[in-house]
Image 1 (tube, one colour):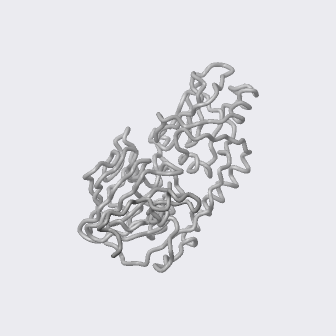
Image 2: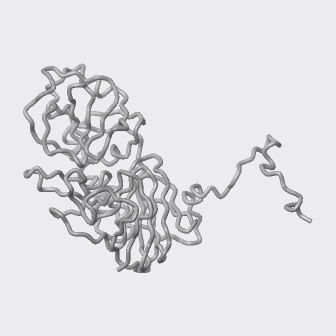
Image 3: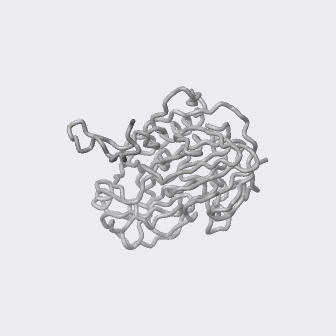
Length: 351
């Protein structure tokens, strides 16, 4: 068994899996991956169970080094540059790190979270049935906190299997779908219409516990305090200041603010990938549509292995080439000033 050593990593990065369902009755939050589709895709690339533990990499860069043998990994989620020994690596693909090689990831683009799955999974001791980290509760394994430089993950030796890519459905920039309630009667029709018709942005103060929204004030009819009741992933609470908070994977299991709506299961991962400052809208749908979309999402996770394709080493990988910037300096056919970006020295000229 080898190791994957964290050479460098930014905040908001930790080990996450499918979470801890079934324990909320005891006040234990579910935790788990912010984007379950990306987690499952990364795991499919290396032959793991869909919701097996992987490294959830936050918006900043990271680097991972194989020690004690080769390690095979799968990368999915937010787009970002990636390379191994200056060899470009594309997202939604698997790759094998030879002993001593380092996978370097850049900043996230068009998203927040990427997932690095390791062939054979991550070795750790499950806590309440999961390795998922919840730093506030001190839960998770092998480290019950965000990952840090110098951390080591015990991993299985690479199998030598051919590398693969996965073809995922395109993500359309459509509104985030919600089901109104369960306390939408605490808001006027005008307030609910404002909630659905407005542009919203994610606050930079957001985290895995909740995404704070920036937008118009949503006023309550009868005040902002209610008898505390249960919450779910995607519950949209409206506190006293009228600025909604969407509860995420590390939320509390109950809350005392009225909940105007709930993000549907099928859109939660897409919502989690919205970066701070980017505008989006909500759209109200009925319970029947939400349930139908949840079934379609579950079927997508189940059939991810059918979307795997072999990587032909002779093929050009457009995404990897774009990240590598192999074209160098661009020139304009109609601007002679751009034709020679470098002034040759005498020694550089051809004889």
